[in-house]
Image (cartoon, rainbow, N blue to C red; front, side, top):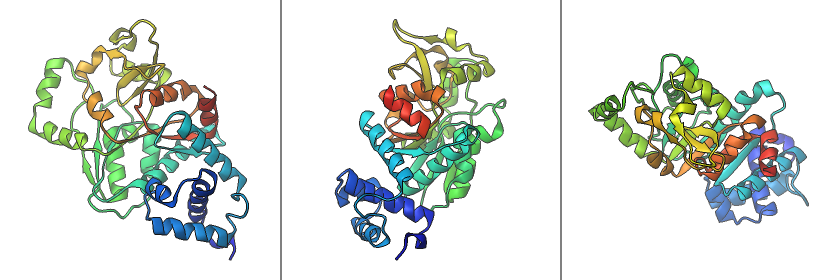
Length: 318
């Protein structure tokens, strides 16, 4: 049998299983858990790898092997649950490429009954547009932060949740609230509304979160559009440098939380609740975001990373 009888997706999946087994020394049971499949399927794939020539003495396909090496090195260096690296060539396609890979990854780990929370951003919008169809039962997708009228419609959290739910045939749960209100009293009042409390309970029940990672140069104008000067609102301690943001939570160069006074007016998942979500997938790329991505991993804001090759290599050097 020849490898040309397999689809590109099959080749990618078979190569990944072979790499984990032969290169990393994982057991079939470990691979099954890691890739959300049965041990029997892992066994069949390993047999097929030999049959189709994917495994001979070494794993075939140099490009794929290099990506797998990057993934393995990043996973170990930053103690992550998992990593996916896309070989992006054209900077202009970065959001498209990251979004496609993130969708493919989510499709492989989804199980019946999962509740998936989403933040906002261009990369997640690209993911929503390319999300593979997945035949799972009782999937719920939920908006983890409010929206604002000035935000481009396709990148807003509610639009992303709407598009993802259509692709997955999932139940969509919206957080019908602005992302920023005028004062903390109004925020408290809104949080007491039955509709809000019902939605927030679903956010608290999330077992997967999919988020972007904002770097300082991108979050500053974002806050400006909301009428907030982040340099006045943020109160870093001595030695803290504003570095990045995940789901409206700001952190420093080491992933330590930075006090943000505007948080008392922001409608979004609270940090304690967010950090309790078991799988936190960060989808982000470009070298200029490397410091923010690194800090997000150090602070455990994300424990799964979907990233491009250039940024992956830079993260390994940091």
